[in-house]
Image 1 (spheres, one colour):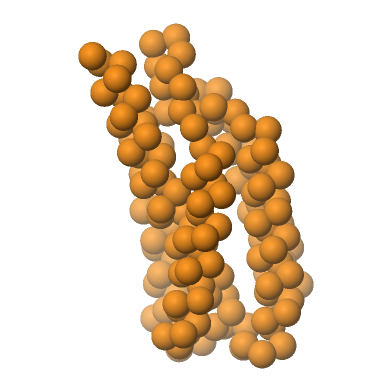
Image 2: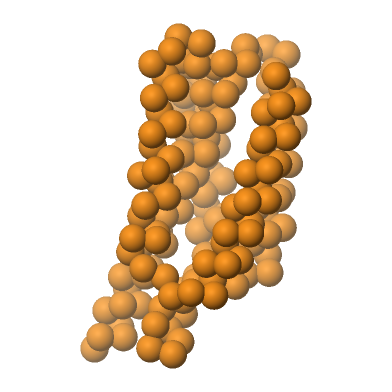
Amino acid sequence: MIIVSTVFAIGMGIAVTTIRAKSAKRPASVKKILLPPLFMSTGALMFIFPFFRVTGLEFLEAIVAGILFSTVLIWTSKFEHRDGEIYLKQSKAFIFILFGLLIIRIIGKLVLSSTINVGALSGMFWILAFGMIVPWRIAMYMQFRKIQKEVSL
């Protein structure tokens, strides 16, 4: 089960990197910024099943780790006004940071899998990912709106 989830995580990392590279070539929009966390929120339905439930401490650990990881993503996500549109700047560091965070998550999963059951660990990593994407996308939205206001002046 750990191997399958690790392979899945690597696949998701590659998919996110590919999507991010393609999206930087098209203008950004509020919808493109805010919809991913909304779509990801449906994953919370996993907690209906007791297999995926986490303790309060596990939740706290996962959300704090996600927020800490989000600071790195916020740091590498910048917008620019170009050709009358607002674009997400390509960051050479983003791919390396994304894969660095992925490696940290995989190592964490391998270490924690000996003490936390697979279901709770899956729940924790979903919480971590959600705790990472929400602050990141809120920061992106605020930055996007700021540039939008500057452009309209």
